[in-house]
Length: 121
Image (cartoon, rainbow, N blue to C red; front, side, top):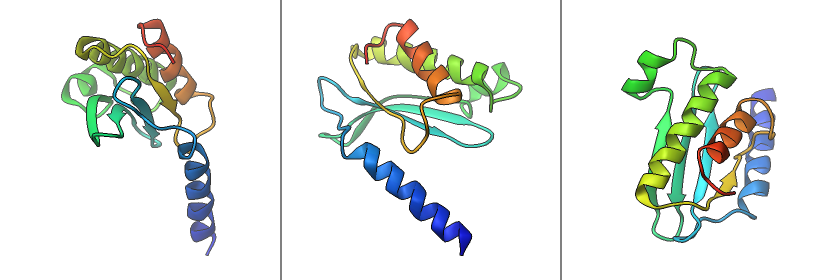
């Protein structure tokens, strides 16, 4: 009963954010997903329905580099990695999709690291 209510509330928050954020070919969407152990980021073109760049703490190179993948340091590394991939593909401007999460902690660390690496929000 309680879990259903929490899931509905999370979906409502997610739709509240998504109705304002849409990724176009010239300004794709930087999507963030976090779990208790890992963090994932991908850049998506919603018109084509394609992922243009992605990084997560579960990829093989990052797993060896990060002993604890559920903290701010890991989020900063993922933010830099996704920004480098995006710049390599030719993407400089993105719109940030924080999903259903508040803009603080790991989500903010990822966003700040991506900005430092050269992405424009």
